[in-house]
Image (cartoon, rainbow, N blue to C red; front, side):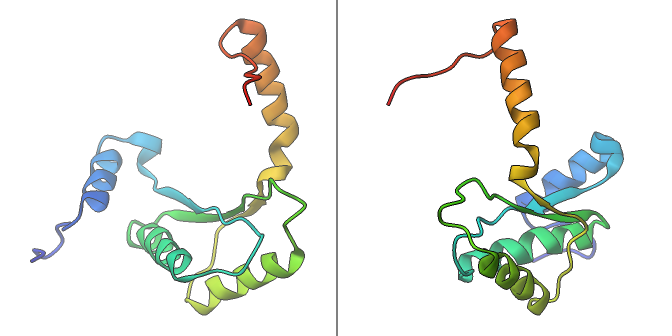
Length: 125
């Protein structure tokens, strides 16, 4: 049983440790990263409630970041449906973003890391 104000699970305990240590300036920042290639299922609902719920409990932020890395399977219909479902569950995200918005930056970092000898291109299939 949970004592008043004390966490009863490992996730909240870890968040409290991180916040207390000043990690990320004591702010909680989480995300929900669905792929917009289908409708949400009960597992997604669990992740939404966990992530958005923790952000709310710790006065943090939860971003909705679409993992749109497979354009052949993704549709705007799914993006719209996912947003509608999150709102139906009673949550609102802080920032909406798409992984594809950062592809150029990811590429630049990869080139830099390879140039420094800190990464390599794996050509195994």
